[in-house]
Length: 45
Length: 249
Image 1 (cartoon, chains in turn orange, cyan):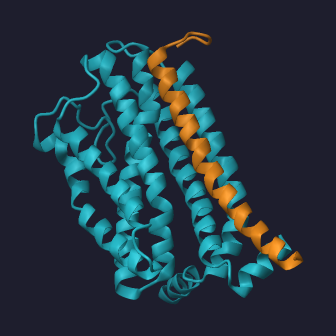
Image 2 (cartoon, each protein chain N blue to C red):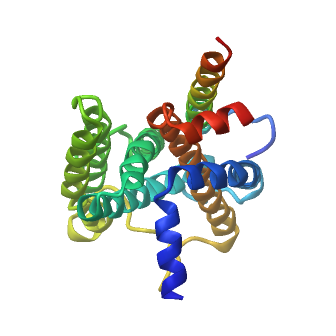
């Protein structure tokens, strides 16, 4: 496939896979941050 | 050797030890896995040869095959964790199943979705109820059942026990997924890659595929560690060790 060539089938798979992978990274990171900051806030109050 | 493994197994059951070690491993696993996925995707999408019959659309293989392969391996590993939980009541096994189930479901979904998008131009249909596709859909439903069951129990221990039993029931489906293309006449083709025999795919196409499989397996290792860390941070947030670690970070 040439650079710049657009194939709807391929790019829809690439973009959906990319979005799902980003969600798989973001969700646990946000959860860890939330739980750790909850402890920090409790200690300071 | 046996003693070392035994010690490692005991350490693995310790939440503070796992939290500390995973914090060190995660950055390396993340950078390595994402780099491999990016390199293999660019290689597969732009530099591997065009298929003589299917044209460019075959390049979906670089996402479809790794996703389907890892979704089955995750389920096998979850079933081992389920047996460990039921026999030895190891809490970490419960954490493992809860953390890996959404990742397994996500990759099974990617496998089904990419297969449907690939099937439309090559088979002329998005979906057929053949054995491979249906058994993979059943695998996806088992993942959803495991995720759904987590929140239906008041106690964590009961939820982990029920989920472990469901996981072990679902493992029966895995050999059916693997062997479905050999046991029945299916629209889905048989495996192109073989570990023991010769692969039916050209080496120019095979190399980026193997790299993408490696990248996805490492990515699952990376996100699996992240999810387990997140689950431990939820379960142990009232424990002294976690308060110390959180304040230190």
